[in-house]
Length: 307
Image (cartoon, rainbow, N blue to C red):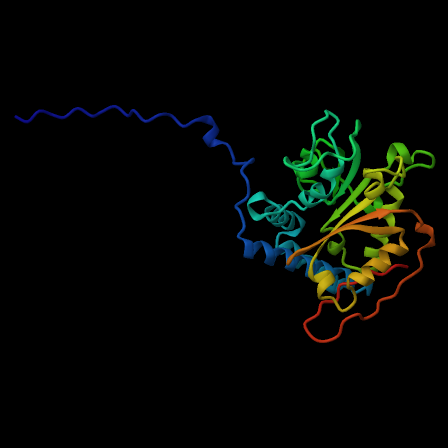
C-alpha cells in the first residue's frame, strides 16, 4: 500500500507592509530625449496660442487650447520633461556655465576655492555669500546651489520642492524703498524662462523688471567689476539664431536700453547663455517695436518688445 505524501507547509514569507502601500514617492517614468523635446515644444506652442487667444478675447479658442494643454499633462508634465532635460545624464543644468564664469573670481566663505584645480591664483577672496534669485527653479541641487557661494532664493509657478517658493515673478513684491540692500539680489537667473512667456511685450516687461531686484554694491573690483549685480539669461538657440525679429544685435540693443551690458556669452547648438551686468537706468528705457531682422522661410517669430 502506497504511503500518502505529506503536504509541505506553506513557507512563503508574508508580504511586507510597505509592499501594500501606494507608490506615492515613486519617480515618474523617464522620458526619452525625443519625447522630452517634443513635449516641451508642444507645450510652448500651446502656451503661445493660448496667450494670443486671450489677447484677442476669443474665449472659445482659449478654452479649447487649455483643454489640449491639460490633455497633454499640463504644467506638471512640462516640468517633468524640463527636469529630465536638465539631468546630469542629459548634460543639463545651465547653472554650470554660470559657475564656470564666476569661479575664477570667487572663494567660498569657508575659504575653499570654487575654481577648478590646476588654474591660476584667485583674484578676489570673499568672506560673505552673495544672493541669487532663481526664477523658474526646478531643482535645488544645481551647480550654483552646491557651490556654497550663494544664498539661494528659488521661485516657480508650480513648485516641485519645499525649498522652491510657488510664485509668479511678475507678481512678486518689489523691494521696499530704502531696503534694496536687504531685499535685493546680486544675481537674477532667468534660465529658459523668458521663452516660456507667450507674448513679446510681456517678455520685455519681465526683463525690465529684473533691474528692480538688483542691488548695487561692492568696491568695483574683481567680482563687482564684471558680474555684480547682473542677469544670467539662457534662451533656446533658435530664439536668437533663427528668428525673424531677434538676433544678437537686437537683443543687445534691448538689454542696453534696460541698463545692461553683456560681459559673458556662450553659444551652443541648442542654447545660448548670456551674462548681463546691470549698470542702472531702467527708467530711461525707450519703447522698442517689432521689426524684421531676417527674411526668408523657415524662421520662427520669437520677439522681445519694450513698451
